[in-house]
Length: 474
Image 1 (tube, rainbow, N blue to C red):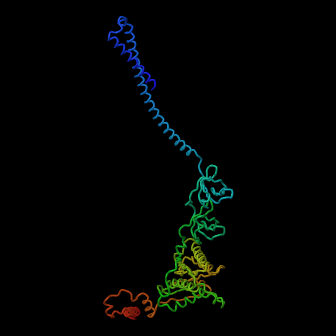
Image 2: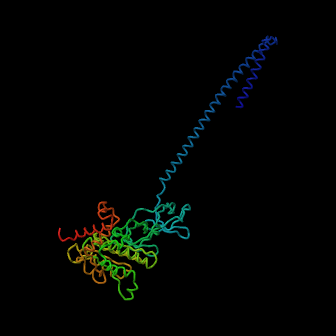
Image 3: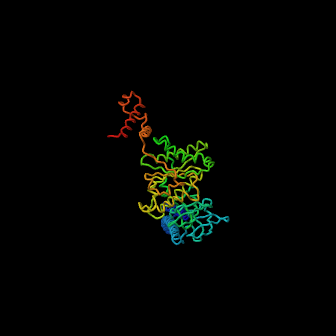
């Protein structure tokens, strides 16, 4: 730019000189000059210089334009090189990932005082270092972690959702559990962090990681839990009609040992272990068993002055049978194990076996597939076992008590047998009075016929119905 300015100044000076000479020649001055052609040559020389400088100036402008174009191309090239550099770096990262050695998954066990971690790698217990970016306080027992090629923990993961399904047999000290694998193989496993806050009971299905020996998840209900209902039904003795005598027998056999254990101890009497309710179907056997559990809880609550929860384990007899050898016996063991767990806290537990004749038939009778030859001894060993059934009462219901094995009904087992007969006319009236009450919406014509007295209408309807049911002729 400076060179261009100097050239422009020189050109202007030459132009002024040529202009002055031309004016002097035109005015007639300097006659010697006319006579001499030196000035003309000088002018011509100056003109040539001017022409040369104009050419140089054009070239200079052209060079400046070319320089500007080169600068633009240089900027484009710089931008292209930067993009290429970024792409090369991305490709280098991809290449590094593809050529990097594989990472190893492990199961976290515990931390050591020297800030190292104990992990399980394919069944091997290893002591490894932890990357500083890993928050060791957030690592949980049984959790997956990622190890690099140097076997250092570089990443924490969640809990693996795959593994073997095992069944809990017992809880051990030291946050351990005794579990049953396939083919009744037993193994001691450690409880993972998620299970430490869970309430576990015998028979629960757990997710077992064979690589580390941890059980890390509680799976949906087991078969025994599906067959056993723990909820206490909201049924009381007031809902039962026509069985006042039978209810008194049930109260004496079942409730007294729970409400007044000191009397039995004073008279050196053993409380009955079980009660058998037998009789025709549809006469209230199941309803009585439900009312017993509810009544015991309320009476104990009244005596102790604190809340008492009772458990009603309703075992569906036929569904407990299984075609595989040993499965039915195992489920019977789980039912009583569950009852003992619930009763360990002092809560009354009623184990109700519905359709008992389907489970505990007379051995050797040949009526069924002889499955009773193993399931009956299992039931007897649970009742008469070394571990006494405390706060547990067994109630059985059957339509055919003659098919039940005599060993089940002998003294010391289900020795209290209460027959639930069909209701007579008086009992039928009492049953109808539980359901046909004055607050029902009766027809207006019937109310007018009885003068608006709903109680009179109910008594008349119940009386006519009972008379028709027990009439000797059609």
